[in-house]
Length: 243
Image 1 (tube, rainbow, N blue to C red):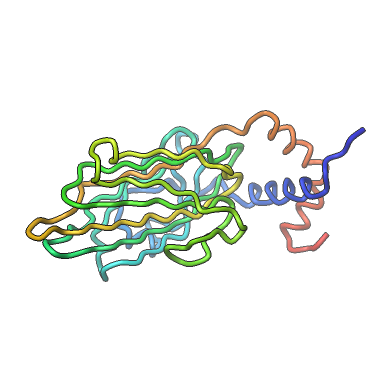
Image 2 (cartoon, rainbow, N blue to C red):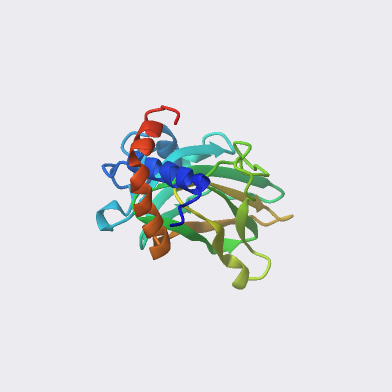
């Protein structure tokens, strides 16, 4: 009888360990300022998207880079979508004539349950002037820099999608199928650039970024079940014991 390769078993054990560590007790994310998400508190830096309706995405680790204090103005509204979801970002300051404003927002998500991250969507509504928003994703890893990283630490390519004002309305929405897919987590960065014209301002009402999830395909479900055969090893690894 054929057996699973040791490397695959090790990966499955790590995946099982990660999922065991993902507690389902996080509160649902609530509307609030980006600054409040950075700081925690009532809008915890660790919260669930759509937890009351079967959501499986736990959001954590918000970081911000941009004009000082503007993270207190930028508002986040959770947007559950199926098993996943994301946020609508609104009240982003407008770039005045001759001005360029850049905002970087990053966070992590952890898949809590039998699901995988399959894609992402990004929308811009409605923009004025010159606006470009790029979302970059490292699946099951993190970027090699806090912002505008050029590679993922696990060696996988950075996956990205972009919306802009060059060809509305087609350029104002985008969708990405993740390849590889996210088996347990992802690091997400949203890079916003507004460039004012000679005598015009640039900005937008809101942008919505969503993480798409699907139930674990049957073959992977079977493999995760087989991983239970090495559950003791997985538990030891969770406790920091090398095996």
